[in-house]
Length: 514
Ligand code: SAH
Ligand code: SF4
Ligand code: F3S
View: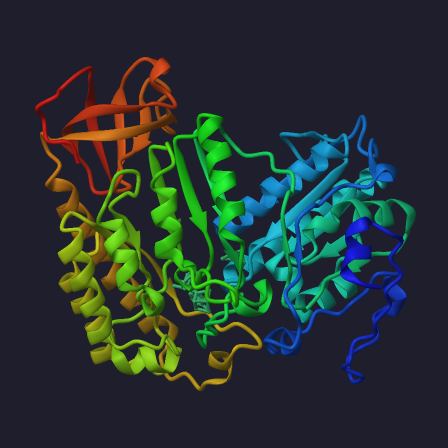
């Protein structure tokens, strides 16, 4: 069966066996569409052509299958997963399902999972366990596990053997097959498993139900080919593959026309955008140069990899306009030796040189980052290099993590002589610097006027509105609810460690706006 037929939604009876004969045979637990995910297969790059499908559509026979039923999706992990949830919600709604606020009154529950660190996976297994009693009370309920964890063989095997109340497992390459998978699950008593360890396709015209109407995510590429030695993503998300520029531009134009105020372009490594095109020489800089002409107030992108961040992109970003002066630029470590073992493919010096170039072109840029501490055998000196790099760059915020071994990645096989207490202590020391630098960056805002995209009521106080500046600073201020969804000027009165308080200003033409 070819891909085209799969997309047409024909009956799938693909029983490709796992190529690992030694593996335990789980065939008694599932029926029909079982294709074992394999990290080994996921690593084979370039053996399979990327296929483009321009016209996703749901075959007539599935229409109305959700009438009178409700769905609930719990999302873990990164923006990529959040956006996949929006696509799956779009498919559910097209099938006639309605969204539900709680698991209790849902007919289908999906867990869209994340595999990035062990604790992310533990949370999901906890939740799968909780759902067992609900399933026992209501046997008609469908429980599904999708997202990055379902791309791991060990996870699939654990669910097959220990969590038989799960009805469906499907992978990140299979979300467009939700109608077929649901139908199979309704018809079958056994678990439906459909996970492809392939490189993935690019499928256009997927329905989406976006959360909110102020900010929107737009995928520009899928997958990752970087294979940093600690990271599971290249295995769970497939090969790097870019959407065509015209499709992206059209989507952003449509969002602008619908009144969205901010777009975040998504990819695991957006700086590799376009590298897979063999007919055009076109990169992220070229794309941003076209997007900046679209009438939408703000455009961001995430996540950048320092290695592929080129001069043309810096030049384009320096034009500002709707391209905001905030770049999230994960460094992971400040030590060249650790970076080498991580296979990040840049040195401390190269990273600092990139930062120098970015700051020369965009002097008021806000840089934020991701850092892993306690990498196998990381020495005290190497860790201190991370602290010193953090200060030297002047990062304004960071996501910081203790290294978590992921099965199947090269780092998981490394011997590690750093005790957990040392790792925890390093994380704390790093976080102290991160908090201090954040507070320092925010201090500069006192009495200044900033532009805030108002997103809604503040989490802690419904009388207060909250939103973000171009440089991604959270601002809380009192204003009428009519300001929600608009970009307003706010004068900063008070500075906290992670946020700013202010007062909305109606008009202030001469003030410096940052
Ligand atoms: N594509 C992005 C990162 C995606 S994962 C990039 O390359 O920057 C988000 C962050 O999780 C990473 O930047 C890294 O800091 C962290 N991370 C990834 N794998 C990890 C692991 N095995 N243990 C701890 N942190 C990890
Ligand atoms: Fe993971 Fe590295 Fe790819 Fe980021 S660039 S997703 S850290 S492999
Ligand atoms: Fe997690 Fe997958 Fe994103 S592993 S961080 S949800 S790409």
